[in-house]
Image (cartoon, rainbow, N blue to C red; front, top):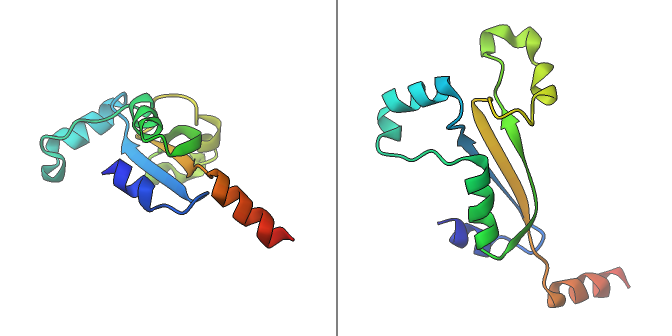
Length: 113
């Protein structure tokens, strides 16, 4: 599925994957009780990065963790940015760009002239 998504991207196009964080105990509890998540396997941030790398189409990967602060504690939202590298957020994300091949680069240069 990820391979197909990456193939459909334009050169330089972005893909973003948000996934439940298997290292967050609250997330694991919520997922275990959700009928939509029955039988799923939660992927770690490094596993998602590996899946994207394995397509051979994606580069410039950036990733982090998010959803540290429950909605009822909105005043603490400023913590989200500070905790992005800590593997305890409710979710993690990985963003990458589709690689440009040689013909894509030549096309860009033609438009610049």
